[in-house]
Amino acid sequence: MANREMRCRCGAMAWQVRETAPGTHVVCYCADCQAFAAHLGRTDWLDEQGGTDIFQTTPADVSLTEGAENLACLRLGPKGLRRWYAGCCGTPIANTLPKAGFPFVGMVLPAGQQGFGPVTAHVQTKSARGAVREHGFAATGFALLGRAIRARLTGRTTSPFFEAGEPVREAHVLTPEERRAATP
Ligand SMILES: [Zn+2]
Ligand SMILES: [Zn+2]
Image (tube, rainbow, N blue to C red; front, side, top):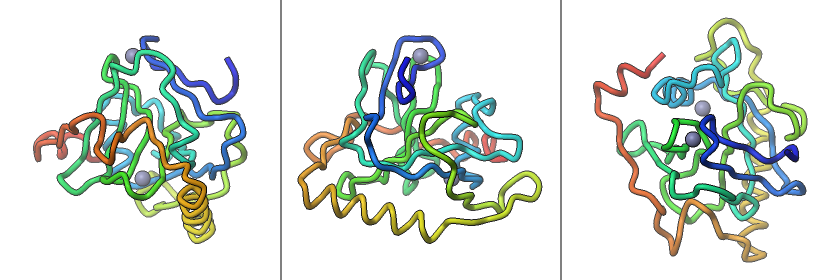
């Protein structure tokens, strides 16, 4: 398997990020990312401090290569990010903004995943379990904006998660009970 090919736990679904795709490898410690993993029963994807490895990149560089019919989506609340996962077995895949307009995707990786370059930012560390030094937030934001603007200028705005401006799956919005149960 090449570095940037990913497969869900049960094997039914596979996806990949283009080898040459520019991106930023960050670890996010926010409570929402922890809740996403907890709701899916995949806290094993988090690092010891509860961090989620994320590769922020351009959606046009992401493709679902096998079992795309298993793609599912949830939101922690009615205004939350769209959090995409393999519905077959609850493996996290990616986070996107609620709407298609801004070409951004955060691919969710298992902690310590190789092949996506060094981690250059640790963000939202207030919600970390234990002390983690926050760094890289501003640079990450600039990189993200730059990639989105380039994608728009070059017309590379396709996404496996949106079609004609609409998400390809209805999202399940967690009930308050589900959300409470998943919150760290
Ligand atoms: Zn699966
Ligand atoms: Zn987060």
